[in-house]
Image (tube, rainbow, N blue to C red):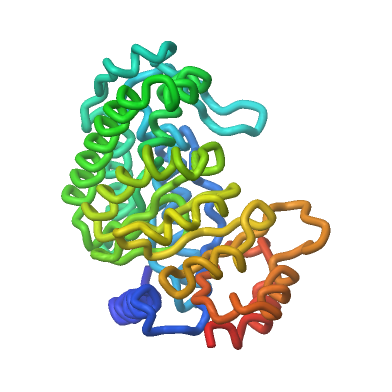
Length: 351
């Protein structure tokens, strides 16, 4: 931690704020060392891994990294608030949870079954404090456990066929359930932030970008690809607005296809700081054509894309298009791509 001086931390936060405000046009590259400790079921391993990662980040000399704990317990942290049997990870997959609402009518009776003290959010706070104690400093930041949006969370709680049918057959019932889920999410994340201290909470597990206090929350919208534009605008967008208004905006993660929702996002009357775009499912140039400079962009490349074997190859395509003028935030880990090549290709982006 001795190289994460107060001056280095303050300078990094200033860069992040300037970029999110739009004052900085040049691409931003943040490179974290390995985050392999995430989702380890052993709490001690999480603390050990976090301390090792923070030490490695400090030694790396990367200018746009903060000492950060990533308390990642999988995609089920929000759904666990309502109960449900957790299915541990196996065969290289992630942890899952069994739906507790097996019929459409039962979602009208969803009740929170975990106290905050029993939740992954309290576990994250406890482990975060252990990390600070182990490193003998309070100059450590923390991310929230995976912030699944309202529709994502309800989908983890409900039989999928029942939920999809309910959007058409019992829309008011689904809306009531979504309102209940949204109320709970806002209350839980507010308590997490208030307990830790808002200045120390700097984003979600996804996306990998950093959000200083007052500049929103990261949130997962992976249900977007399954919804028509009409359904997304009716069921999710009003709840996303409530979350954005509560926390000062959102930075959206979706690793699927969401081009169909761009007109609705363009009409949204709340702050969207930025959005992840995963090629080939969604093409960044299509998003930029609609949203332009309203948001920042975090591009990723799905593995195995023959036409663009590496992120640098995709960025060469960006360079030939108008989207090269966008504000790019590349959030990477070593080994994901050739970082030096990425910097060379993108050095004129944002102009």
